[in-house]
Image 1 (cartoon, rainbow, N blue to C red):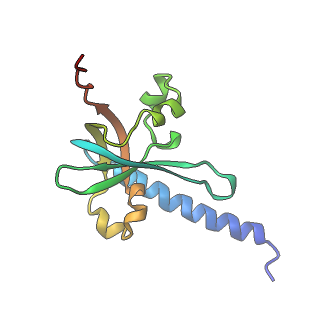
Image 2: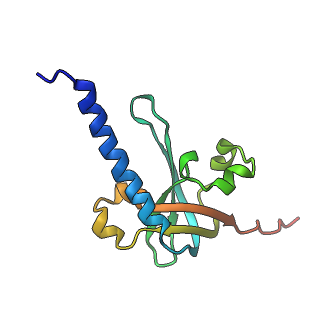
Length: 139
């Protein structure tokens, strides 16, 4: 029996944190991409054992592909937070059907490195989304 079970758990957690950070560092080395997209869904993945929730938004791209991005507080750029925008209000501004320009970074050969689509958001870095202005209403 392991006399130090907490140490084993700590090492496992540290391993997964290392893998996650390696993914993010690889992504940050890439050039920014800009595309016109449409918001097709949003969801919240509950944090493990009371940890922070992950807020995910799926965008549809011009080629018909859909990509999911993490827009949780820890994933966003510092300029976003220094602007003083309250996070929950930011997430709530996204609605299915919104169209605009997304700025993001994505790991090269993401399909090779992250085989399951469900987890590919870990290889993407959301930077911003500029909604198209609402069309004028007709009176």
